Amino acid sequence: MSASAINDLDRKIDIAFAAMEGNVDAYLDWYYSLPAEYARIGTTLTGGIEEHMTAQIKEYLNKNDPFKAVSIAMSGVIEQHKQVRSQFQAARDQILRENQIDTVTEPIRIIQRMSGSELGVLPAHPVATTIEGRMASAAAVSVITGLVTTKVVAKVAGKGVFKLAVTAASKLVVSKTASAAAGTVTGAALGSFFPGVGTAVGAVVGAVVGVLGGVAVDATLLKLDEKVSRADFKREIVESIAAAKQEFKSELFAKK
Image (cartoon, rainbow, N blue to C red):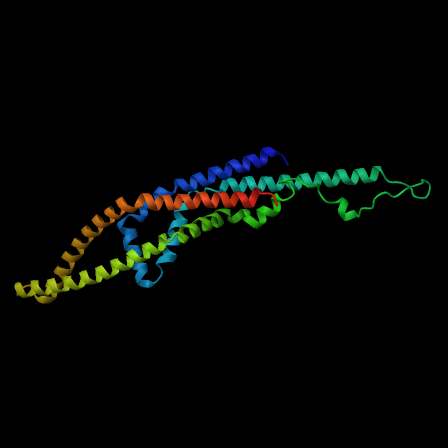
């Protein structure tokens, strides 16, 4: 197996992780948007916010299949490894054929014994003899992106980022519940002040006014949250990607 194939794989891994890191800003743009905020509130009510956040960050980090080239390169390395092993076995068989000794007519002296299975073992190589096995254990070629992303997301979750989001969404749910109650009171007051409108219609008008006002407040608070926390959130994700990259390379290339 050529060193150039290993170096090419190593370079493609660097490019893949850089591409994944490049997807972080798009994820944060979504995260700090009102639709995302309201989705977090909705999934908090249904009890699935952590699963929702995990699915969303995976989707964004996987944009444009950053590990496609790595999968192709890994397949190439595995194929080259198979070819090297086949060439070794063919050369071994030829050497054995050319050096057969007739034990009946030729005097022999045994100085070392070796079984046929031992003769079939490929000589040790720092990468060639282990790369195929490491690829199989580190990540199946067809699911590399998913497994790498899972590593990254697990590291992000381990930093407690998702728990903070769950707490924030829970507080907003409480706030929204209070706002809805206030809107109902406002509607009743409008109905009383303008008897012709009616309490029921006034309640609807009050609720609409409350919602419109709430959206404006939500947008303002979300922008403030983005100003305060986006840089730290991005740093947490980028650090998690870097840690996953180091772990992935260690599993793939480190000597046993």
